[in-house]
Length: 344
Image 1 (cartoon, rainbow, N blue to C red):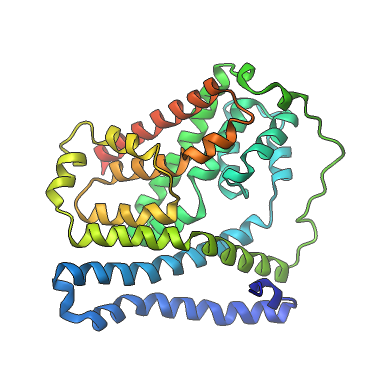
Image 2 (tube, rainbow, N blue to C red):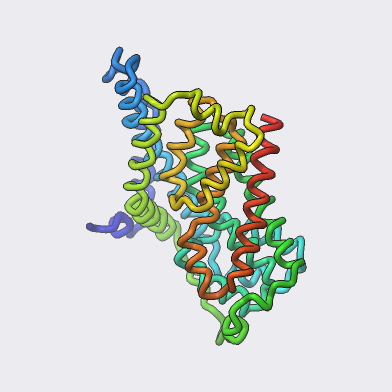
């Protein structure tokens, strides 16, 4: 398949792409809901009709949100790099460094597959362990997919709560890990790694057509990788929306159950998914009356503490440090869930 970015090689092509794509995006997004309401008509009063409308409407809405936010975030990210991030964090004291690392983790390209090289590079460059852990927690926890879907599904308020709580969790968890002085539980070869030469900044000479091309490539890459999870999650959400009894969820994880947040996080930690797959399920559970704090705690535990990432990090961290990382982060997520349930 030809990469979208291959067609954006000149300033004119870049601006034509934006000029056509932006109105088309808004038109599709605006017409999505009324179209499916018209197409399905009275069928939405039945369980299968409600489930079908949920699936069709959410599939298009989420894909549009995903593409739009990824494009914008990719352009923002084109102004930074892992090398710049590492340079900014080097030598920062605890506290300030943790907050800065968490903020940079949101906008710096990072995923589970790059956890090991990123960790080695940061520690070898002199970035403190706790500050590095704040970066590693924030990067998967607060990602553009989750922001895009939360914004479209629940609005500005819950999205800002998600971003703010994620930054606090990453900052505090990294600070605690740093204060515990757990450097001895990092595999020795990490500290023996030497960075040779000054890294070249790959973003130094990017033009706006280059940045538009990067955005299109990122959209094609991420949507291409996540659409199966996305549709699977929406399908499960549709089933919950159409048939699952609200009383069951209210009993297991409703506001009256004092252990609801603990149950949600305990279920989320071993569950492997991504934001694209889990957020449609969160939306369906929200429609059934589950409180937002419980749902955010569930989503954050799934996204931030995936089993594959723990396996990858085992190459550079000893089990005790991994357990501490999971435990401290999980406590922060649980506390956030209870706090949100109390104030929302």
